[in-house]
Image (cartoon, rainbow, N blue to C red; front, side):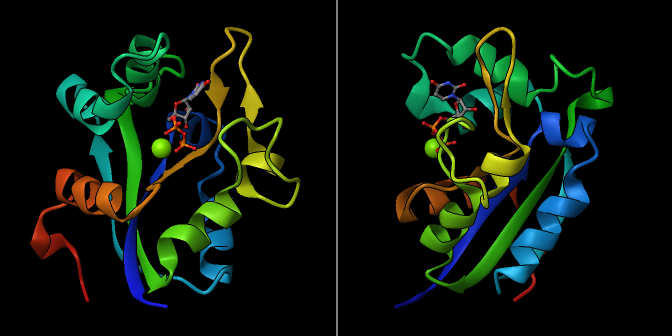
Length: 151
Ligand code: UDP
Ligand code: MG
């Protein structure tokens, strides 16, 4: 057991469909503590850096457009970025977020109950959550300045 921090992004599909409150409700109910939160205008540079590990995947370009809100007409590419902290927060948040493919995600998870697959085949899976410690550390640095994190 250890105290961890993890990055959550409320993705454009969730912003568009007004799911922000539901997602926050579930994260809070899971017992994790919100230690940072802000709206971010996602630039192409930020999107590419965030998903750099997936740059060779066939869906990479779509993924970049997706997180920039290009498929949801989000003004100024606005999304919500959060850091949650708690015991085993990285794995714990992933458990309530559910599997990457909303069709495979358990019904009680965020993606299982709120996600869908677009007609283009891209997963509209509501949230991003860091996958492991290395990713969490890198992503938190990428999305937040240290003074924005209140511990
Ligand atoms: N993704 C997709 N189709 C796929 C695999 C991934 O649309 O076959 C998208 C989806 O939005 C996912 C993101 O790419 O959340 C990042 O993929 P990753 O494998 O890191 O999944 P995650 O960690 O988000 O569960
Ligand atoms: Mg991932």
